[in-house]
Amino acid sequence: MLVRALLPALAASILLFVPYEPARAQALTVVEEGPAIQVRATQFIVRSRHADRNYLIEVTPPARPPVFPGQKAAAVYALDGGWGVAGAAGWVLGGGGAMSPAYMVTVGYPQGQPNSREADLLPRPVARQDGSVARGGRSDRFTRFLLEELKPFIEARYPVDPSRAVLFGHSLGGIFTANVLADHPDAFAGYLIASPSVWADTTAPDRLRTISANGQGPRVFVGWGELEEPYMLKGGRELSAALAGRGDRLATHVFAGDFHITYYPAALGEALPFLLPRQAPLEFPQPVDVPADGLAKLAGRYALQNGVEIGIAPTSLGLRAAIPGMPPVDLRPRSPTSFFIPDMDVRADFEPNAMILFVNGDRIDTVRVP
Image (cartoon, rainbow, N blue to C red; front, side, top):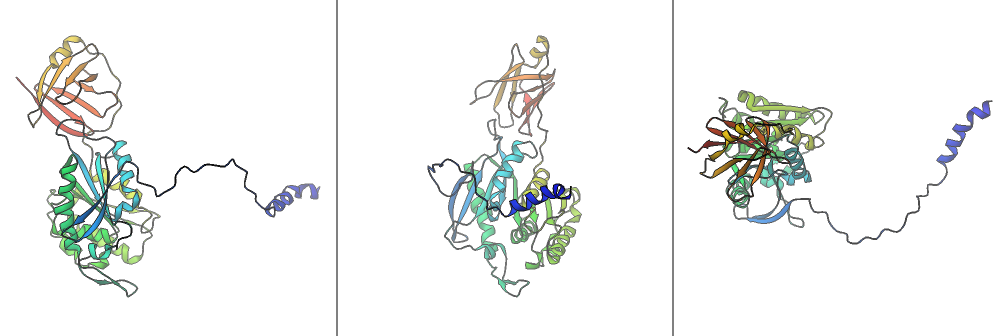
């Protein structure tokens, strides 16, 4: 009986000593092999006259791009090339309705060219914890590149709203982002400061305390990993405390169980919905029936703030919108005064003398033309 009971264990131990031989598979033909290119992104290598060097810029458009004439989307500028994940993360978050759709713009360095990260992100040289020196000293020039060259370039090439731009930096990029906030608080509508290297510029917390705390100005998100080095935890807490007067325009998050870089993807999912909130949730309504006389009352012309007029006419299934430069689109009723466009993130709410549109979560007001 004892031998029989030990047979399974004996068989398992024998298997441990049998050499592993992978399963034979049919030969797979490699048609082409090369470096991967980020899906959906457009790549630029640009020359900065302020920084006197080249930068690698990748732009990922939102999954739900602007639809109406004159409509613009937000933009997120992620330093350190967004660590290769910012573009895809923004596409998913915006497309899934977690945040207002945004163009994700990553800023990095071309392959094969010198990396000036420390010089670009720090205002002056500074000693690291191990005694070596971080070669800072060009952050003012890099800031001018971002504000005076890159942002205007992106805003000229894409339908981007300058008033809804976010700057995202991690580690040395985090202290750089904090310094931009302190020196140019109105340059961006939101600041994502992740694991800020306050050790590299201890003046940042005191300078941030002077920012207006009356509920106006940019939103700020500060985050760090729970398991980071003690000096990094101290820096994050100091920076967050310096910004505490911003009230509900500040969000602080400690990522449980995470180290210095491991929470980076989660930071995007936590921070961007706070920094770029939708003005209406993403919904998937079902159509209802509305009497013909109710539809007729809504027909007419509605003017956008830029003067463009949208014509609304009744149909057998709801309403049809005629928008200059676009094919006619059908609106299905979700209630007698609220309509949606099937398969699109568009809602139209009618009031006595107005139509309020929510396009990709952004509110667009129109007035009824007499």
